[in-house]
Image (tube, rainbow, N blue to C red):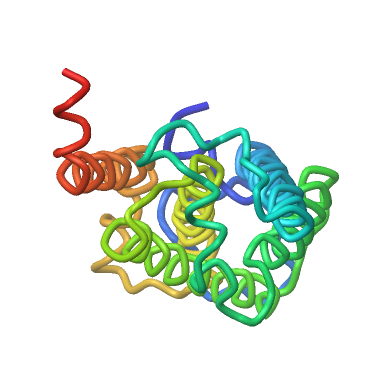
Length: 221
């Protein structure tokens, strides 16, 4: 299986390398994409569960120190005690528990051969787009307002970015999001080098973290 076909939606006939015409019937997914959704959702669910547990412990005992409080920069407790940790009036990890739990069910269904209507895939696209925007807002807050990082939060950031990217690729290639002839080669190459964007994103975030906390990192050299 080549990189360009690894994430192709499953169907009774071969899927072309480029995006298909607008989809009308139920749409499934290839094994690689289905397994990715399930595993990514489980990672996000595990991280959200740990954060929820630590948040509850802090509410019970304000002096509680989470296990991921490693140094002044890597400090979950500093992040959990901020207003940004409860954007919608409740702890952010509860949102993660609900969202990643639902995604895990979707991934398991796809892996078992389930197929969904176009509106479902568009809803998943919208959900991952919202998640993408939310985590980038959180990244900005963590770096330039709170001044601390949470390892479990960072795992969620990476998971959401990857879910958005691969969901977008799936929807473009399966015809959920129609693509004109001129852009089909672009989508084909994006699918072929699907790893490039997540790697570039991780590199940019790493550089931002290095730059923001350089005064601390330099003391460790």
